[in-house]
Image 1 (tube, rainbow, N blue to C red):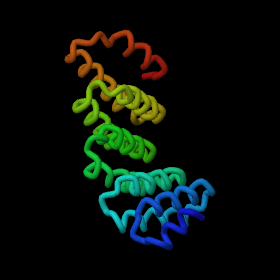
Image 2: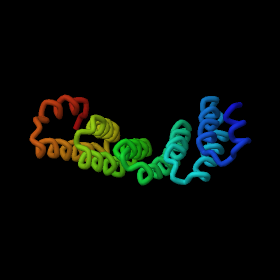
Image 3: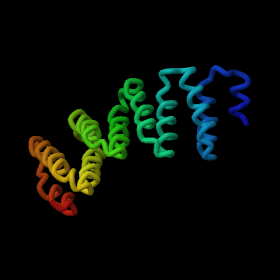
Length: 171
């Protein structure tokens, strides 16, 4: 109610639209949430939160491609969060079984931010997902080998972790 009053008093405030969209999202009124998020991004096209919220909205509806499209708009708008955005982009591609695209997003993060605590885990999840599809097992092994080689080039002892994490993959 308060946010709607704020919009009524000054319809040029994108933050109010975001908050109203969040309220609709909590109520699972996706159509209204989308409408308010779109208004916020129209008022302020560089508002990464609006695109992030739209991505989350589509993700909740399992519309992975639409979520990917919205999340991708965040990358140039908030460069300091690029690693997190790219992890999310990789996740969306993985959910669409577009594993090569997911791999590219994850390895982009790995090479640019090697100390990111989430990226290696995401690559392992990708490999596990790929290994469930018999035709993808060789590709899964290639990705795992690439990660192993990257770790070794960095001088890290990766053998124990490599063996433990890949133990549930049967070739």
